[in-house]
Structure formats: C-alpha cells, structure tokens
Length: 252
Image 1: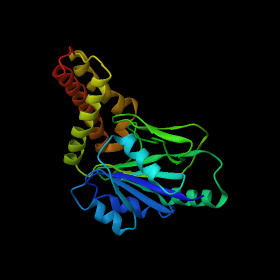
Image 2: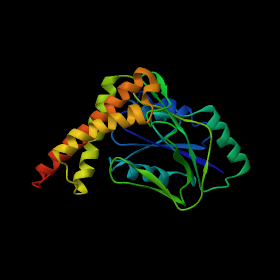
Image 3: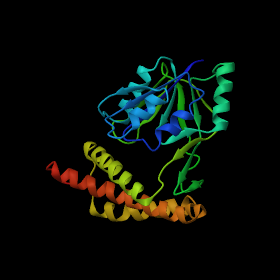
Image 4: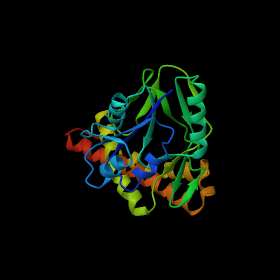
C-alpha cells in the first residue's frame, strides 16, 4: 500500500511546511498551487513535494486534479492548514503494513481556534474522509462545500486530523469574506430566493444553535467568538447572495 499525499494551496507559506512534514507516512507528496504570490511553492519544493501549478477551478476540481496527478492510487488529502497527528500517523503506518480492508477511511478533525482546541460548537468530531483509493472515490461540489463521494466501504480511524484554523480575528474576517462570496455565488447559481426576513433571522438562529444547542459555551471565550462569527458568516452569505441575484437582474 503506497500513499500519495495531496495538498491544494494558495498563499499558504505560514502553514504548508507543517502540513508536509506531518505526511511522513506518504510515499510522495503532490502540491497543486493556484497562483500563490508568497513563498508557498518554494517551501513545498524545498521539502521534497512535487509542485504543480493550475489556475483555480474550485475546491473539488483542484483536489481531483491532485489525485489524478499522483503516482499511487491511495491518496491522503490534506488542506494546507491541516496536519496528521502522531496517533493518526501510527494508524496509517499500520494500514500500510497490514493492507487496507476498506476503500476509504474517515478520521475525526480537531480544530484549533485562537489558540484553543475546540471540542464543541458543532466543530467536533467533524469526521472527514481523507484517506481513499482514487479508483473508488471522487471529490464533488462546485463551490465551497466539497465532499468526497466513495463508491465502496468507508472505515473509521481514531487518530485526529489536526486543523489549525485562525490565529487572529483579522485572519478569520479575511477568510469569512472569501468564503461567503463563494457561498453567495452558489446560492445565486441555484436560483434560491433570499428575503430580508432570512437575512435578519438566520444569523440569530445560527448563533443560538452554535452557542447553546451545540454547547459552544463550553469552549470558553473562543466559543462565544465562534458563535458570533458563525452568525456573521450567515448574514454575509445571504446579504451577498441577495446582492448577486439583484446584479443578475433577478428578483431576490
């Protein structure tokens, strides 16, 4: 069982080294970069990754391209701000020794936000399928919420995939701006209607669900910030969608 690590990047010089260095269980690492203007590609190449450049086509398209470019059928897909924990690495080494008994494997993702590991707020266990046989799986989704569709069996692993999200509120706000634009374009493309009632009510509902129903209050001050930011994300998504719908000359 040989594994190709696959990472898609865009201006990830702050994270890419950690991601690559955590992929010791991989037999090669493929990085697909979509026009970074920082040192991302240089860092990746220096650490032994095979770096390919491709214009941005969407998350699913980029990840499928990385998998297709790999030398091996088994793919371990990481985002640039993620890393394989030591426990997960040990499990993967065991799989390589024993051979796979499934077509794909899922793993719980543990996120760090403003210096705290988040175990509530709807963020955990956030199980993701990231280790897979490319002959049995493919990434789908045109916009923000890409997912891996597997035509076979999926088995669970216990080790954490570590997700290093935001170190500052300014970083989170910048990310919100980018992702809400993509989410709004998706809503507009689907032909959804966005009323002012939805714009006003959905953010409050998101805050209540995140902070109270999903126990975000147990995540300390970071949990409160997460709940507010989740509500703000919802507001921006619908407000931008309404703006995009009107720009297209349609009634929102």
